[in-house]
Length: 227
Image 1 (tube, rainbow, N blue to C red):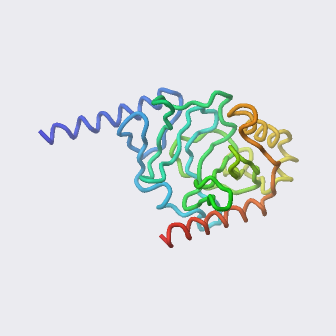
Image 2: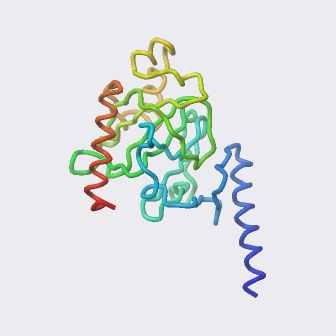
């Protein structure tokens, strides 16, 4: 009986992944889907990847590909990707799709005691969409300073190889080569939850963004006890 159940379980996982692909969003290779609202990778997304790779690029777990409105996030307990449920229904952002690939940096934390939300730090990687669940290496170029519901919720802005933004190294260059991009990003975050929920305070440069990342990795280490 158990042998018969194994192929059925694998078929269910395959169908769940296929269902997500039918929604127009690709899923990274190597993930399994025990149900339509969960993606499980080979390791824990939060604890088992470094925040920064050997070349100094930040690692980003892409939760929401560019253009998507489906609100997925990494579960801090089991390290899987989950479609957030609200009133037992999958949450969708009631606005334009995300203006970049949105995700989190492993092994980071914005501490509650410092005004943060207690979650890993968020990143928006500019450029075309990549599959949900991808781990991409990106270069930080800026930070959008934000408060969401009164809690600090900064968004690092990053670029990756193979896109039109690949040569960008800082905020000044981003604004110079791609006029309007930062205005689009800030306008999107100010409004995607409705009027007055999110407050923005402009952008910081790459140096400020890197300092925020370093503090977030330090906070994670302190909280995790050197895990």
